[in-house]
Length: 302
Image (cartoon, rainbow, N blue to C red; front, side, top):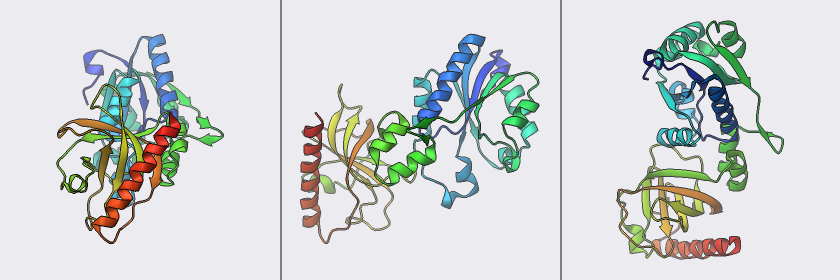
């Protein structure tokens, strides 16, 4: 992290993982921008990578809703001037809450105003909380953000993951404030889709996705307006065994070389779960049905 204090730029800061940058996070960012303007401070965010749960229990960690790059781009879009990414490692995990306040917030970042969620925990053994932060805030003020609810439900990254896992994309979009998206760079695949008559844009995923299946999608980043299509997100059980997760998007009425392009896939409607088919011919027939069903979805939605 580049210390803001050393540059003489005291900050208004909010702290959190911000996975997915959902409507609860957006409310925090709106309050951050308001306070920064009122107090003439630099609006900043402190976030962590990897997610603490990935550090402590990698096998049991929940899927990420967004990559670090996508998260930082979203923070920038909401007006955050400086985003500080703290590497969550053993040193940080073992830091006492009082030391975190003094070393990271005061000396490292030069905070003058701090906003955290009312359930915020920090420091070794998660001993630090909002009350402790306020008690030790000698040179900065502290504000707690109350829970944001949508239709009575508490907005959280966990709630978004659960909605996505159930294939409830409209519910997830309500919590996120927008349709769920995944971004990445198009890579060369095994060309099976092209051989079957459905050339796809293949985006390898570094982390386990929060949803799996076949979807009607819009793809951004290739033309001025988004392109419609069908996307498969998962491990392709008919094609490979023990494969890494892959995002494959077949774009309607589009056939151009896009290798190396960065795209954003917007998930609008789940068509079905992944399934294993007895042979490639059966898979091809299913893809044809998927394409027809997705076209019907877009025709009904327009």
